[in-house]
Image (cartoon, rainbow, N blue to C red; front, side):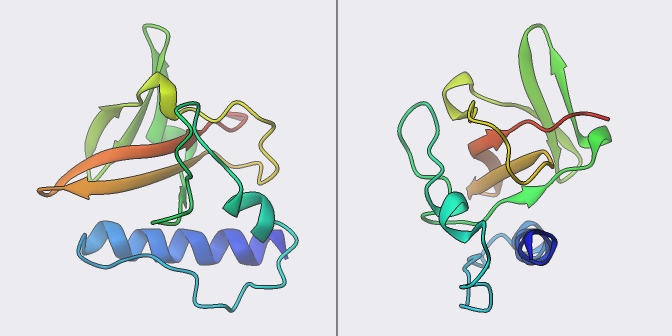
Amino acid sequence: MAIVALRMITLVAVAALINPSVEARDDGRYANSPLKGWFEGLHSKGGGPCCADADGTALDDVDWETKSGHYRVRLLGEWIEVPDDTVITEPNRAGRTMVWPYFVNGRAMIRCFMPGSMT
């Protein structure tokens, strides 16, 4: 079930990245996922909910890194520094590195980021 939920989140997020005007929302297909409540309860250090307005996307290991003590992610071919207050520090139950982007004037911003194992 977790893999199904993660695939749904990834597909919706990819669609949002391709067309930033698309709002990524759960249409109810994954209401019974054991991770649904956990995802919906995720908050950044700044207190903002991660899944309130957009769903996250899983990143491949080549699309995130640490540099000078901060995380960076690659979105739409551009490296973006992850603000420290958007990093989720609780254990990653999904296992994969996740990012919750949003867009302002066509520019990708980070709502939440959850590092994975980088294996």
